[in-house]
Length: 328
Image (cartoon, rainbow, N blue to C red; front, side):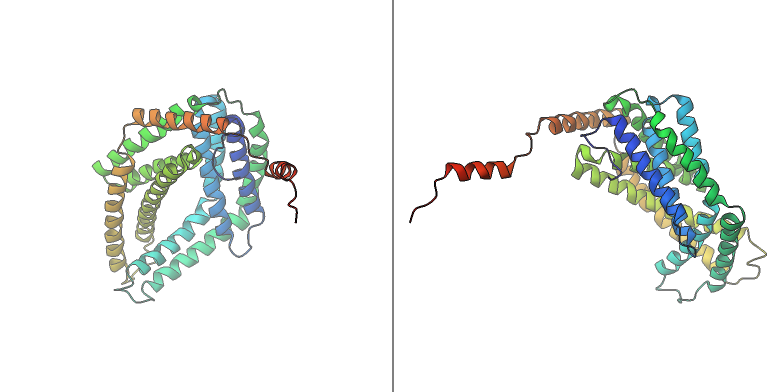
């Protein structure tokens, strides 16, 4: 099933099912990773860890605080153990995307020496983290234990009250992070807002069935904003990495142009993110969650009051019996 709740299963069952599905997919991806491209499997697995953490946050008030802290810390640590492999590849992808964005003024081989340095660093990191430290195997072992714990989770309620305070908190923190990010535009503040936006995006995806067309459009906008902020963050990380590697890139005449383009592209992305954020966070938290409660109640009522599916085969059989065979 997909990453969303359904009205035909109790909320506690749906929460556990979603976490279990994401966990199983992460385990499969890390177990069957392609030998020459483990970064792809690691990237997908880390995205699933973030989705699981979003689910755990959404039901935080339902779980014992010790359970919440244990599970949230578990999946955060799992992602962090594999982060360096993915981050090294992201720097390469970011440089390529930047070159493509400015392809009208750059040659195809622009920044080739920087690309080579990033490639070398990525290969060394991949070998160390995956091969020498056996990080993937260590994470897999922890995930198997975490999977067995899911059935022990106890959620108190089976209605919107289980989600309302946690969704409100996610939205409220995102709104505050948005305000802080544009009051003082530091990489740290922009990254903090990005994390809050991603949690909102995941929550909206889980709640999509409440009003599919509207919630899908809302989740899509949140996803677009998260991508925008993600690209900005990747550029900030690339910039920082380049400036912190004087020995690797010493005397590289391309760096001044590259830093200028990074700064310009970040300005574009941050401007776009600001307008997206103004729309996404236009509503105050309290009336927003009240509106979602109405969507939830309507969704539940509609689902349980719909007539049972018509037995078409039985109806056709009855019609055949009722209608005499035509005579010649």
